[in-house]
Image (cartoon, rainbow, N blue to C red):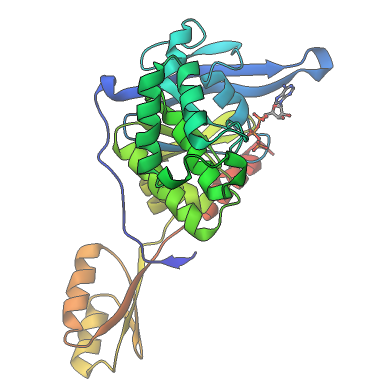
Length: 327
Ligand SMILES: Nc1ncnc2c1ncn2[C@@H]1O[C@H](COP(=O)(O)OP(=O)(O)OP(=O)(O)O)[C@@H](O)[C@H]1O
C-alpha cells in the first residue's frame, strides 16, 4: 500500500431521475460471425448524472471503445439501450446534439485552420447559428486562455493547446455529455494540470463527463465514480472514494518532532497506538485519532498519513480477482 495523505473530494450523491444525463441498459455487441464471433461488450449498464465524472476503465481490449462508440451512436448495439438526456441516439439523431466528444486525441480538429475557424466550422456543423458559434467560440477560447492564439493554425500550437482547442470544439454546441478519451496523454506536467482543471470546471458547470484513460492517477484525481470493464463486462462500479476506502487500511502514521514524555507514551499506548521514537502508528477510527493527537500536545506534529490504496492497486487487484475467479 502506498502512503498518501490526500483530501477527500466526494460530492453528494445525485438522487433525482432528471439529473441523469446518460443511461445505458444491457448494452451488448458481438463482432464477426461463426468462428470469428467475438462478444466485445456484454450487458453493460451505466448511469451518469449532471456534474459527475465517471472514469470508465479497463485493460486493453476490454470493450471501452466499443461501449463509447455505442453511446456516441457510431456503433449499433445488438442488444440494450442508450439514452442521452432521455433520448436514444440510435433512434433520434437529435440526441447526438447532447454529446461532445474528444475521442482520438486532438484529431477532431482541422490542423490548417485556426482555433477560431475550427470552433466556428464545427459549431455550424452541429447546427449552431454562425454568429452564435463565433461568439461562443471566442468565449471558450477566452476561458481556456487561448484568445491570443485564436488566429494561429492549430498545427503550430503546442500539444497542450491543441488538446484545449479540441475540448473547446467538443463544447461548442453546449452538450450535456462530454466523452473524453485520454485527455492528458502526452502532455507535460503543466499542460496536464491545466487540462485536468478544465475537466473539473466543465463538470462543475453541470455537464456529465465519461472519461476513459489508462492513466489511473488521472482517473483517481478527476472521477466521482469508477466503472471497470473486463472482457466486455462491468466488474466494479461505485464511487471512487468508497472504492479506495474499501481497499485501504485504516492505519495512520504520525510523526512528531522531539520525544514523547513517559505520560504521553502511556496515553498513546492506552489509545491503541504503537510508539517507536518519533513515529506513532495507529489503526482505528478517526475519533480516537483526534484523542491521540490531543495527547501528543504540545509536541509539533510533522505529518499524519493515512495508509490508503490508490486506484492502480485497486484496479489491478479487481482485475486479478476476477481472472482468478474464472480459472
Ligand atoms: N470492428 C471490430 N471488429 C472486430 N473486433 C473488434 C472491432 N472493434 C473492436 N473489436 C474487438 O473487440 C474487443 C474490444 O475492443 P475495444 O476497442 O472496445 O477495447 P478497448 O477497451 O477500447 O481497448 P483499448 O484500451 O486497447 O483501446 C477487442 O478484442 C477488439 O479486438
